[in-house]
Image (cartoon, rainbow, N blue to C red; front, side, top):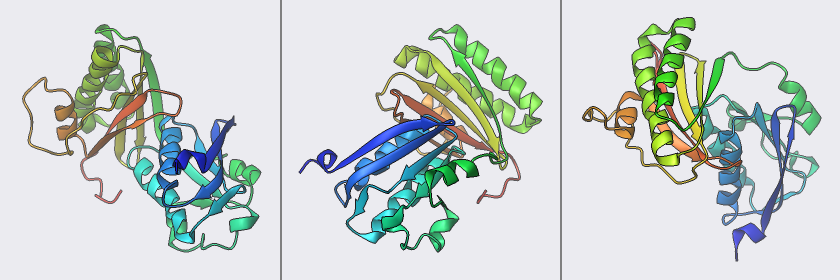
Length: 252
């Protein structure tokens, strides 16, 4: 049976937040459908993703692990928050044990939105760029100026290189406008570039031996503490890399 016929999701936007209302059955076949949809929603970088489970049937309680899986992936590179609204049918599940380390659980959607009034401590800025070779120079200058303003000089060199490679990759291969986003939190700087091309990219594991100059994404992976990409629900994809400031504890 086609998983998409068993699970559907209604999406809406409110106060900068994406609200997802899945309906149908969450089982081992539809688990990846919901997981991938939530990852795509987070890749669009809303303030938060709120998941209302009022219309969802759980085949097994342990399948709520899908929300932890999504949080673990997103939290590698983004501060987008994931909030679950269990609804009456799932209010008695174990939402208060280890699950609460990763998720915000609220009784209603209005309560979830009210919680989002205070954003987590972070700095964030964006720059829209046309699909032009000149955009690489503009991106590098933007990153240099931002690192100076945020007093994170030790990260500036790697951040400039990563941003230049990602923007150049978007201009050459995606041939679409790009959105460069910088986000600083807990001593880590995320450099992310979104474009309109949904084709996947191939990123080597982070921290590998330094490649030859001008080697594009392998160089990004070499410089990054973590790197990856995700399709976006609105279309296209986002490619991201996380740089860790010297002295930042590995677990942060």
